[in-house]
Every structure is written in C-alpha cells, then in structure tokens.
Image (cartoon, rainbow, N blue to C red; front, side, top):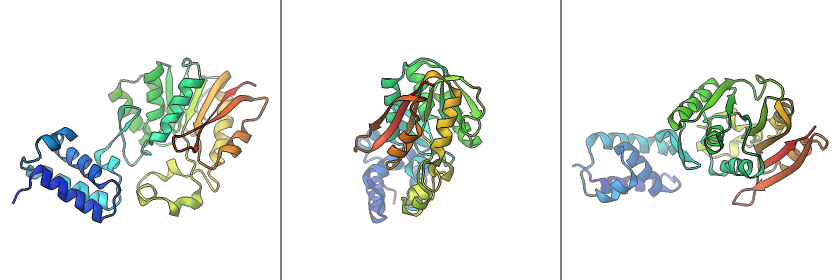
Length: 279
C-alpha cells in the first residue's frame, strides 16, 4: 500500500527518533523535501497526497544514510550559510553558523576594500560571501584540489568574482599582495579525535578538522604567512578553537601587530581573532 506524504514523514521521524538522531522531525522534513524536490510548505499543503514511488525509494535511502551517521548536508549536498546556499561534499567541511562571525568581524573592523584572500577555503563560504558582501577582489586558496573544485562551483552558482589557487596556506602568493586575509583553519587537537560526534569524525575531511597535537600548530604558520603577504595596515581575521585564544594572541607579536581583539560567539566562546599588521 502506498503511503501519503504525511505518513512517510511520520514514519521517517520515528525511524530517526529510534536511531537517536538529533532533531528527528526537522531532519525527516529536510530529507523528504530533498526526495521530492519540493520545499517544506509542500509537505503540509499536500500531506494527504500519495508519495510517488521514486520519492519513497530516495527517501528510504536518505534515511538509511542518515542513520549510518552521514550528515544531512552531505546527503542533500547543500548548507545555507550567511543567507546563501552552498554546495557541500565530503571533500569540504560543512560550514557552521558560528563561522559567520568571521564575516561579521571583518565587516566591522576592516575597511571593506582592497585585495582579499580566504586561506583554507574549503567550500568557499568565507571568501565567496566576503566578495559578494563587499565587492573586494578576492582569491581563495586550499591545499585540496577537490575542495577548490567545490568552491569554484559555489562561486559560479552564486555569481561571485573570485580566483582560486591550490597551495599550502599562502605559499603561492607574492609579498604584500593583500590588504585582508580571512581564514578558518583546522584547529581541533588530534587527541580529541575520538571525542567528536561520529558525523564529524567519520565523515568530514580530517585535513580540514585537525590542527596538530595541540590544535594551534597551524596558527604560527598562518600568521607568518600573513605577515609576508599583507600590506602594512592590512588585516588578519581568523576563527580559533575554544581553548586557543591566549596562545594565538601571543603569536601576534607587538611591534608587528596591533589592535588584536577576540570576538565571542552567541554561546560566549572566543571565536574570532582579528589584528592589524603594522610592521
């Protein structure tokens, strides 16, 4: 017997509840919308409609994948970030809402002009959003070629004007090439790997997650690279781990950096460090 849209949604919700998946109703809605190719309003306006067989097959597969731990965003291949849809794949970190503070701090503290670089761009969420919000000439770099491919796809779909360079941090760029450097580098300490949710640990790219034994190793290289490629008076804005604030601030040597500040996220954790390069 065929199920209605409402019945399929109810069954999917129960399966996710029994599987201890967070936000089971919302997740079931998202996955059913994806299976149908419709938005959420359709589910409730057409709840008594018979669910097409192909949609039921897709919905069942999506539920199975989610129950196995695969993040919803990798199933739908989409994550909304700063009000825009970004394509995401297992080659890139899923952009978190907290990372939007990087954009907010940059908009508040930097002059919103000049050449800009997003280091370790992943999906391109930071760099593409910055370019669209400011119109600044923007480049995005990543050591992962597949990640750069995802970022380039997002730039095309969102009509952002950006360049893409494959390199380790800022290694490929000339001295004094930029006025603004933005970054969300990998900063989870390697020993914390086993404490992470399985959705993160088993599915998101380790290259984008782990920052070394203490989680701050990459910041010394990132800051040194920024000192080389920033123009005097340029700005560095970067996300940090929740325990890294004091150690990262200590790397911003007085006499080379000024006006270093930490912005906290909505939960009160230190989230973004910004500073001006003044050698």
